[in-house]
Length: 41
Image 1 (cartoon, rainbow, N blue to C red):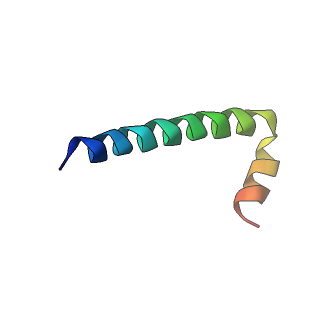
Image 2: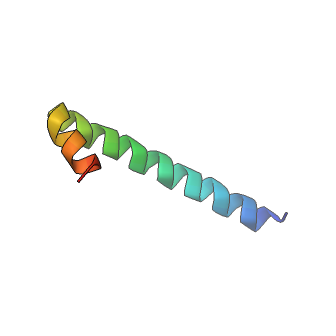
């Protein structure tokens, strides 16, 4: 398990965290029924 792999994983984790934060912010902009429709087409 070399350091480069560890750095890559940390980078992916931080990117995923940012995407999750953006997604939750976007969800708050829409009413609940629209969220449900987009989750279950």
